[in-house]
Image 1 (cartoon, one colour):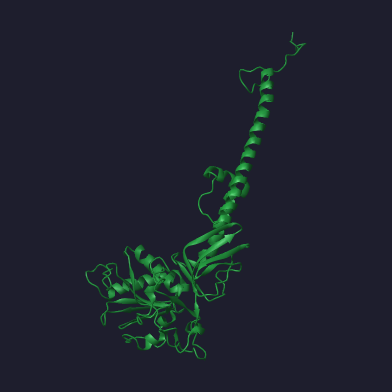
Image 2 (cartoon, rainbow, N blue to C red; image 1 turned 30 degrees about the vertical axis):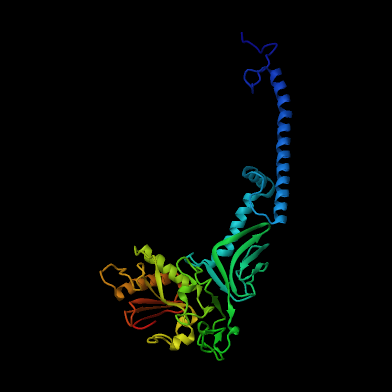
Length: 388
């Protein structure tokens, strides 16, 4: 006989959430725990609001008084309140992205540039994030805020920061340099410093845009001459070698040329050549000096040195004023200058926008071998003696 379903089925046993408690005890525990949790949450939110209020009051008092230093909230509470009320993490990330947008184009292909030159009122950078502004300090003036990222009207060297909403970040190891316009030149000089005149400055059509007269000059003083314009180079490295006691001096230096030199250093080091110091034997030459100053042998009438986009250089780690034996053959000659020129060749192949001239020079007239490097905009190669 088949057994049928029980007349009085048993109740299914409940799954116990809290082992060791019966059903009634579980219900009592739950109804007791809920108010406790709600009270805890209310207290936590209230504490954060209080901390935030104290933090904002302290920050307002600090800004009003001008006193600097740490605010009275602990770092832990600051992190909590900033995360809850300010969305600090996302804002920081957004600010960092904004900084990269602004600064990356100015660092060059090498990533080693620390300067950019602009004429007064011109655009510092394009593509700045919406709502951001440029904050500039230096140049002998008070802090300036530029909503359209335009260069200051007063020539000088400025530190650049980017402001987005209430956050401001300074761009480290970077200077914006506003140029002294060429219109300030009178009788071939600015102040007491003689420059001379560039071809086609008084009229006529230059053979190409790269031979047009410069728009302006960097004003170099005794105080700012050691300003780094890249990882390895300073302003003073490219000054014309005359008028030693005349200050301020005026300088042309092309950022692409500095970028090319930094890339050449990177290329040499990738090949196992240690470069602690790349000596600039000749950088910018004023037209006056190019035509009549120093040893003029081998100088071109339209030398790229007059346009600030050329440099005669050699590796000089021991600082003895001569090319080092970088090919390690036991002597210093043009073969060492060729090692440097080959590195520059590789740079041009990798970075066509930096194409220009490369010249290898042998020892002559009191100097050792060196390599001429420029960014004239088209390929040129030669060997010679003289001054590049």
